Length: 100
Image: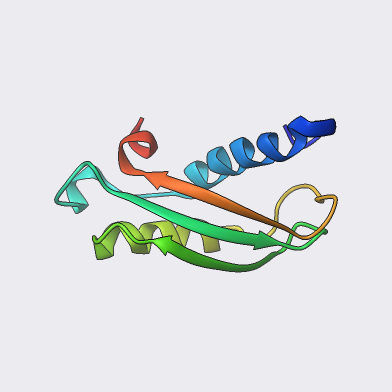
C-alpha cells in the first residue's frame, strides 16, 4: 500500500490507485451498450499528491464510458498521501472490473 517499502512500493501505489479510482467512478451498467469496455489512462501526480495531468492512452470507443473515467479521475484531484517524487501511473479502467 502507500506505505510500502523497497521494490514493492510502485506496484502498491498502482493497485491502490486502481481501487481509489474505482471508488470515485460512477456509471450504471444500463448507460453503456457493451460490457467489454476498457480504457487506459496515464495519470501524473506531483510529489505532494496533486494530480498534474492525465492522458488517455487508449479510449474505449464509448463516449459515455470514457466520460465516466474522466470524471472519476477529476473527482478527487489530491491523493490522501504524498509520493516520494513526481510519478506517472497507467491505470486500466475495465467496465467488468468496475462493476464488481
